[in-house]
Amino acid sequence: MAGDKQRKHLVERIERLKKEMRAIILAHYYTVPEIQDVADIVGDSLALARAAESTDADVIVFAGVYFMGETASILNPDKQVLMPDDRAGCPLADSCPTEEFRAFKAKHPGAVVINYINSTAEIKAESDIICTSSNAERIVRQIPEHKKIIFGPDRNLGGYVMKKLGREMILWQGYCYVHDAFSWDVVRKAVEKHPGAELIAHPECREELLEHADFVGSTSGLLNYAAKSSGNTIIVATEPGILYEMQKRSPEKTFIPAPKDASQPWSTCTQMKQNTLEKLYECMERRRPRIVVEESLRRAALRPILRMLEMS
Ligand code: 13P
Ligand code: SF4
Image 1 (spheres, rainbow, N blue to C red):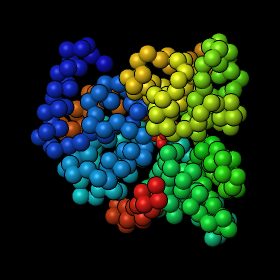
Image 2: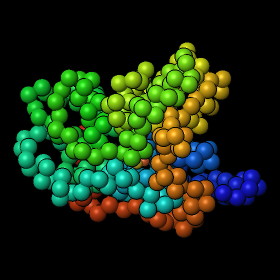
Image 3: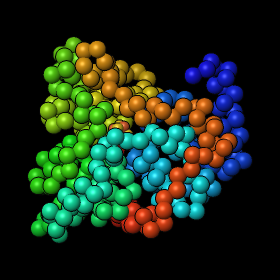
Image 4: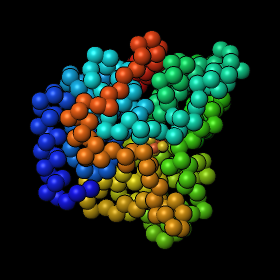
């Protein structure tokens, strides 16, 4: 990224375009700070889906990963949805190919299919209900006890909800490489190095880590907990982009990203970091890449997303 002067100039041009285009910029907490600073709304997956649903802007510019822009487009067929980089995919979403998922579903007829929002439009279209890490528990609770549930594509989030609710689910075995990378063996050393520190973790982390955490929550859950906690030092097992907002909310506290291994002091989502200020500006100026979902697929994928929004 260029120097401060060039950055300021880019931000001014983005602000100007935003007004001219009647655009809203949505960004996930995992994006880099300069993207978060220029966004109208920074949020977790649920907050951003809600913002995409309710905005009256003409153009939605989505700084996140592909499934997020796609979800915004599914919710808003009449708006232009732009992304700084449409090659920023989510490997978790991509770990669930449609044909294989259909075959998996066929083995469990009658099961209610709940898929995480981190999934492709095709997988959403195969689902009864979508969930995010903020509302997964609440949605599973609403499914009658006698019903079987298929949960995908994140096995760690699914396993966490199963354990918390004491309810069996049939899990697709996908995972997020960013969160699954944390092992208790490595994180324990950071905990031992900071006596008295709290450990908080995202439910996409493995069970071996979650069972040692003082608090487990979605991105917004972790942010709220960190702001309210009376602890001064908090070790955070999730994507470290979240630390920017945590530190803003609680400047007096020390936040330590949980280490991935001895040589890597944090675990980063490379795809989220593909959103740069330059690409943000360019996508607005050129009005591309634009995310468009074919209409019959869009309608099929919309139904379980709306169901989620009703149920949460
Ligand atoms: P949430 O924003 O729902 O916490 O999900 C985290 C994540 O991995 C986004 O890709
Ligand atoms: Fe996908 Fe994980 Fe990156 Fe989220 S953090 S976008 S789940 S790879």
